Length: 429
Image: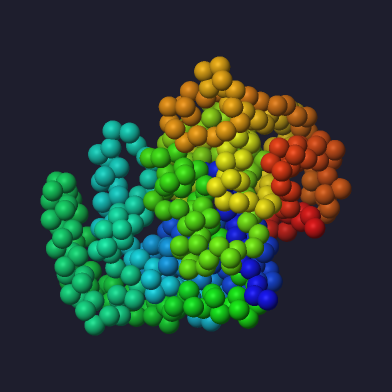
């Protein structure tokens, strides 16, 4: 019997605490895989008293024995990746042994972030992009003109890069940005720096598709970590206020080369409330003192951008949508300790769309912008959860809150985050 790969997916707008769940699953995993996105995403993990902000390397590598794999669906910035590698080496991690990069992963070039920022500046309605160049890099990929890791070692790399540079100079001139981005299109500088980056990363580059399938054939434990989250998916999110990839289960498959038959459990990660960075609709957002208090208690500031997050109550309508899209088998609920500090806690169970009550989520912006949340209220004041080791140890109000989530969703809550530390998590068998 072949083993199956377990998947961890964010259910809302990112920053749900996926890294903490992955960190637990990777404790006895042989491989942890990153499938989509780029350094616009991030997991913050505390390990050995050190806080690590992982943007490209799978956070599972922090177990010390798990191979971190950057899949073909990722667009990577070599400079950022090399900085992460250096940081891990400084803290004693054997990165050369435990990191692998897909030869098919696309490469972010210096003009991508600059073009990202320039295009965002020109938009009348801002998307809230991180400006990391992710969107323009994916545009190159789907235009079939981008550079993959394997191209950095090809005999015609110089020729490919030169042609790409020339075509992008013409494109930027069309947008009136050629002068603004001239330095980022200096061919000789690009060629020298990316040739150097390529050689530094060469020991890690391989055919990760074959590596993963052989690992499953040998009954190895594989964990796949999704970047961003369901409602930021370019197809299934609140378009156009989304990311440039598919952080849902479909992107997990195309971003790794795994098949549907290779997938085991799909864990959906949420907070006991909700949050969002950037523009776009957000039905349960609280633009009041309660929202501000959630932000401060939960330390809701972006790992990648540092921007304050928009905060609100938990939205079970959107969560049911995430279950449908991803085939969730269980949930992880983080920040139970944060929401438990409120005297009363609200949970959105339906939307009121101009007098019509529905439990079905829609990505239609007009419907979302006019939807009003229908709430169910629960008693809060969960108290100190730090001493809770089992589900049964949780206060009655906390168990009632989680029980309602399970009843509404029809799937169990398996992981319960009770604090910021990696150890502060209950696991239900």
